[in-house]
Length: 523
Image (cartoon, rainbow, N blue to C red; front, top):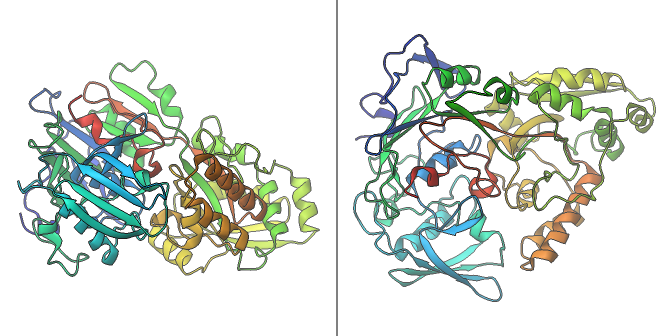
């Protein structure tokens, strides 16, 4: 097939269009015009599902984009993990059973029998051990595995992972998110960031990569008919890059089958539609201000608190989402999740209190935001009324991420997933966050650091939940970030072609995407 950047042919279903020309996005800059041909409804033997998303880069664990979770989800169709999740929680996958030592440091996994890689070679415990050894030198881009001390093969179907310390989220955060890779492909690859051979995206998953068209950010996956869970019911899955403003029309025209928006008005728009349905997710995406607490005047907690009470966050949420607001919690963790602490301090809209905290001082604050962000124009008059002039600097995501990484900012507007296990709070402030959209957090608080480390190794669920509640209290007092609101995703889908699902706690580690591979597999 050749290198991923030079794959021949065109993505199936990119051809003539009846009445609508769509624009596919390549990355964040170049636009390439293309058209999507409508297809017949799927049958048991010949079906196609088209998902609207964006370019997520070359689909290997070492090259996939971390600009949002779409790349990790695409990989989950090509590769498998030790565990998986359904609408109820963690379920066995490559591992059929597992045992955890009393001290939480050793996990022994029994693997499913007769699993094969997509080239027909057997997947064994040797591949699992190799994967974690390889990631120790060449990290998986989406989730760290540095808590693994060693991986030992006990038999062809048994492997033991020993951790440096107990890590209670391991089954969800690592075993359920880190792709197992084939030893026979990667053992002689010293530079996986540039490895581009035909087998670079070879996995054991239900779909094999047939084509990646980099100029359009378009992917074609075809069913792995020898999949150990049974042949996929959907024979082909395409992931296509579409501008957000075209998504609803593309769905109405029958040119894509699944796409999301954060705009709640689609529920009313599509009410009564016999073909298009809407699946609503929990509010597992946050829009927040991240504040550089190393830069005056934001190094003063009273200034950060003044900003929090100066903002009518419910009004901002209504204007942006066009739905009922889910106002941001000062402790970051969203409501409607099991780790949320209802007792955490909150900051009600109170402009008079904001003026009092500022003591008559007038401030100017620069806010980093992406070009299409609507929130700055809503925040500006609210802050101006209490004596804070907001100057918005609009930059593309790559520039923003670099400025955040280098701490060359005062405040920045972020929007990203915030579901799953709350250990993400520790990763944010330890500089271990992979998601490009969630970079830049600054907090120098020994109490927070100690609590964050303690919760990450506490095995007792009740004790750990109490520690996570205390973490939320520290964040609410220090306010290094101000969550404005949480977003629900509204997934529009063609009900004649597929039925998406909400995964318990979000797909893998809290991702509110509904294209869980279970929807493509035999029931």
